[in-house]
Image (tube, rainbow, N blue to C red):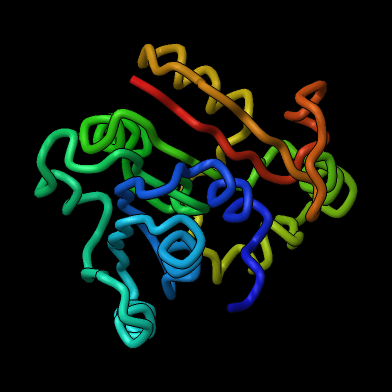
Length: 196
């Protein structure tokens, strides 16, 4: 098994043994496979890309093709222990509604996203006048699926507006964790564990 992305490694290390998990935007199922192997988790996935669905299913994973914006409503309340939305929030049409769906489907949700207020993003815009390409934002503006440019502070404000509790948060610069101090400026991506 190949190593997990840093945000996925944080999520995997905090999912308890034998938890039921819905990984929304699961890609090729790397996190699901790791959770199944290391935590004996009952991991299910929802993925938009047909090729990724086929790859995940070839690994013996339970994945269905679907769109988070429209298909989460089909899942019953409290169907899972955890919902996971990694590097997908910024690609959804209605991130605020998606958060509500995550916490309807499960009492806890992991959400990770690239921080568009990261200092290199700011510097690229300020000094180069162009949309950045970074480790967390590896595609040019015309090739990215990102339609909402969320920052850590924007995300925290949305959580306050919706009355969603933050149980834990982790901040990453490259592959390394950093403290919460000045995370909106210094962290390239964030991982939040949310609760009802």
